[in-house]
Length: 158
Image (tube, rainbow, N blue to C red):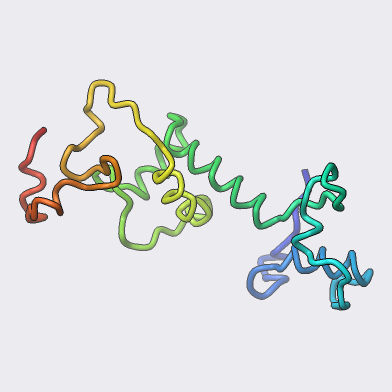
């Protein structure tokens, strides 16, 4: 599988994030990635399936978001060594660190993490990884509802 070279001999080739989707759009409409031409059809309309009589071009942004979601799911559920390293760097006591984490993997996944947690359901099992007071139960976290001080949460067992 190929990739775009962003560094050449350690020197960045591109400044900032490459706008690959913009380049694709420019190329399709004008034949040159640097030249923007007035489009006849909206780019979003092109990014649909062929069965809808569109061009069938995948939106790179949506593809990237889907890949980040899959990667985040792997981080939350896999037991591989790379996952152990990521979890050790990102999570503290089962919750995401508030400070910035320098990780190329986690940077893409952190946006998908909230979406994943919002639309996920957990099987409790033995209950050793669940916390009655700090975990989200049916859209509510119990400790703030009962005004439990943060320094007392570690003392609560349930």
